[in-house]
Image (tube, rainbow, N blue to C red; front, top):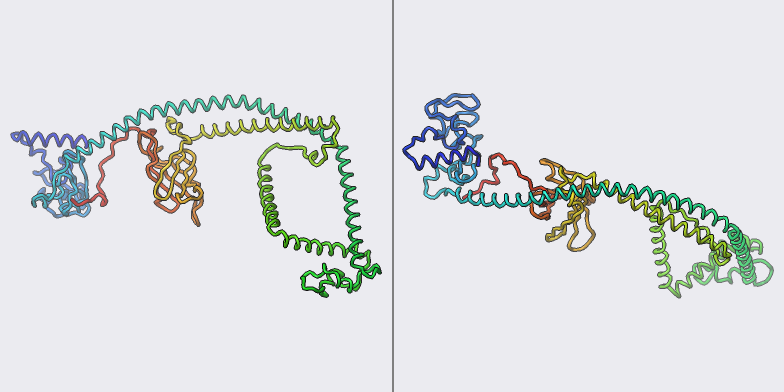
Length: 522
């Protein structure tokens, strides 16, 4: 209630008690706020507020609209663009559209908008005292919350400033530690590279031995393959004329690729390259490689028939090992400066003499020392980056939100569980199972007044839609709590959150005309 309305209420009560005093000088037309009463003088002509006309005062509230600005009909519904002022003594005054005057619905708690209908007994009761009392009690309750919340807010401000100072001091400390860690990393890197050079030189002779061993094994394998070729050739060459002829191919079941009991001409042509006979030399150079493929395919078919489950398991294991290998490769790409001398792993360590074993062990220890120093250095870097990012966040003009950084609050409804992690992200999880859906990541404060609405955007994409985003509206409350979560538009969410950090005194809002949504029947 404004000071002018309070003054008018006091004067009205005063006039009602002391009737001997002439109060007609302050009587105002119906529907006019007290502060505008001086503009309506009964013994003078009335001038429209917009200056368009001057009319006799008797035309005021005569249920006929004379002034284009509706100023001559404040107490009737004659002007479509007019407004009616409800004094509502004992409660809050109200301004309603003139169209609601005498429409049979009580908009003013004092019933003044239904002055014509009030001739009927009980049309509108004056409920202003009751409503005013309830409003004052509610205002008192809210004020107590604000006062208590304001004290908690002061504690949050002190905590925020303390956290900021702690983070700044921690960064200063970490810079000192980081310099030492970087020096240790560089020293261990040099020691590792030196040890690996010594290791490489020491293992060179074993590498030569290993290469020679591999060469010998290759020669042996080649000889075995050649002997097997001679054996198979002699097995097919039944007439011992050192040639494989078509009749001999017909008798060798391996060439029956489709397992129809006979070797077709196409099957013979594939092996013999459209020749009538193959010499031993041609067989070793060309025919043996094609025959090995047929023998391998035949053996695999037999193995699959005898052990189908084992083959499936082997295939699955190969697929899993392939997936694990891909994952390991991805992980290895993300690790920096992890250069290892792995050539020694291919060598037979049992060949090493004691001196070489010692060199290899020293190189291994040098690698481990470098990896540990590098890990510590990168951990320090990550901590410094995290602290700097936290200091750069806008936690309010007095750091009143700093203590809430990263704190998470949940709200459960019939279908979902919503999780708000302040200055981090918002997620939604279905009660029927499934993975979490990210509804947004912390971006900034938006709107006016500032520090009342948080924007979380860059959430997961909706199906055939935009990325999800959420507006979090903040109101005063003694304890942080997530009160509501809705989706007013597709992929756009809204949440209400109470927190003591916003418990500050608000200026009184000006009285505004009521809307159709507030037009209730008695």
